[in-house]
Amino acid sequence: MTALMRIAREIGDLDDEFYADERQRDVWNEASAVGFQFVQWVALAVGATLPWLAGPTGARVAIGVLAVWFVASLVVMTYARARDVDVNVVSKTLRPRVMLAMALYLAGVAGIWLQLAGPVGEETETVAGAVVGGAVGGGVAIALIAWNRRRVRRREAMEDALDL
Image (cartoon, rainbow, N blue to C red; front, side, top):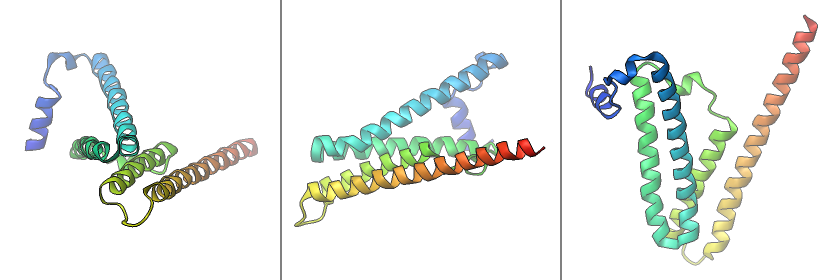
């Protein structure tokens, strides 16, 4: 057993007798996934808005929030890969929720950059509007394309089913 797996078993308390009951284990794993996703979305929302609402101080806090978000995500993905599950292989990565997460992350990074090291001689508000507008507009465009592709696939599947 690798050091990562030993540490993960300790952190997750995976040897507890609670996990002996399969239903309890499954429900707890689902509840943990919901809690993890909730924390992930809150961290992204906070990291994306703090630089814009609280200026340079908010940008510094957002660095910490987004760093914790990033490390937690890496821990989850690393653990899954160590157990022979690669989320990038078994799931669709260009889903609207992934695009929204990327847009929030990029809005936070852009806000941090503008507050702490932004372009000299430019109005911060103008650059901020361009960055946020581009991120939101690009995210909406990608989400609409994904939605349209999914709609077309559903329609084609229904037509194929009718042909049988």
